[in-house]
Amino acid sequence: MAAASVGLAELGFVEAAPAWRLRSEQFPSKVGGRPAWLGAAGLPGPAGLACAQCGRPLAFLLQLYAPLPGRADAFHRGLFLFCCRTPPCCAGLRVFRNQLPRRNDFYAYEPPSEDPPPETGESVCLQLKSGAHLCRVCGCLGPKTCSRCHKAHYCSKEHQTLDWRVGHKQACTQAGDLDSTVPDHSFLFPEFEIVIETEDEIMPEVVEKDDESEIIGSMGEAPEEELDSMAKHESREDRIFQKFKTKISLEPEQILRYGRGIAPIWISGENIPQEKEIPDCPCGAKRIFEFQVMPHLLNYLKADRLGRSVDWGVLAVFTCAESCGLGTGYTEEFVWKQDITDAT
Image 1 (tube, rainbow, N blue to C red):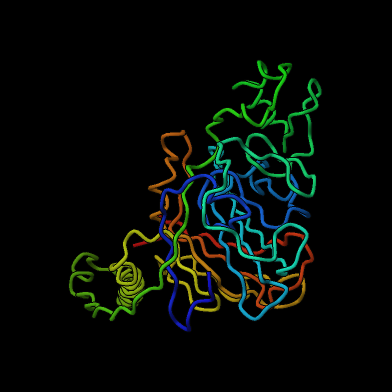
Image 2: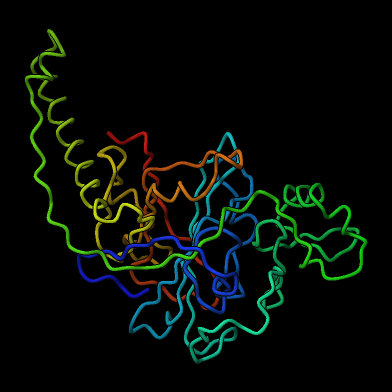
C-alpha cells in the first residue's frame, strides 16, 4: 500500500484468497485468521495482547501492509489491529506497528513470487524464523507449553484450556506434526485478503437545512435557548452523518479507508477525539491519523454466528508521525472507537 495522495483515501475491500497469499512472506493486507507477522522477533507478548477491560486474550482483527516510500528503515511496514471478542466485554482494542529495512533477517531482498509455491498445504505454521513459538488458538506469541507433550504452545491458560477441550486432549500423546492437526477453535475471525483501490473524488451533496419549525412544534413550551441549542446540535449531527453517507455512497462495500495524515470521516458528531486525547508516541512525536475501519466489515466477521458481539461505528488508528525506528520490535500505537450508537 502506497501513501495516499493528499486529501484522497485508499479504500480497502475484502476478497477470498488462497492461504498461501496470506502468509507473511507475501506481505499481505488481510482480515481475520492468524496474524501474518512481519518481523519475526520482538512480538507483543500476552500482556500486550490482553484486553485492558476484561484481561482476556484479544483476537486478531486485521493487518495492513503500509510501507513508507523514501524511508529505508520502513521499506516493509505493517499495522496489526486486535479486538476483544469475549462477551459481555467485547470492548478492548490494541494496535501495533512493525517496520523493517529491505535487507533484514527474515525476508529475501527481492520481491516474493506471485506464483503459488510447490507446496500449498493448509498446515498452520506455529513457529517463526526467529524460533518464537505461536499459540495454537490465536497465532500470537505462545510462551506457555503443554506440560504433557511440551510441543503445543499457548499465549494463555484460557487458550490452552480451549485447545485441550476441542482436540489436543486426544492429539497430545500421538506421534506426528501437531501443526497439521490444529482444530477450529471458533475463536478466529473469517480470513480474507484486503485489496486496495484509490478513491474517486466525490462531489459533496447539498445537505438540506433542518426544518426548525418541526423541532419547535415537537417541543411544546421548551425554552427558546434550549430549542436553539438542540436545533444547532441536530443540524450538525445531520451534516456529519450525511457527509459520512456521501463519502461511502459510490463504494458502499468498503471496509477500510487509508490515508496517512488525512482526516478521518466520522459517523457521528459525538465522541470525536480532541487533539489532546490522542497521546503522543513514546518517542515524543505527535500521532497522526493513518486508517479507519468501517462498519461494513462487521458483515464479514460472522460474529453473531460465533456467539460474539463485536461492534463499532468507526475504528480510527493514529500512528507516530515520524514512524520512529524500532529495530525489529513492535510498538503499540493508538486506536479510537466511535460506537455506531453515537450516530444519528
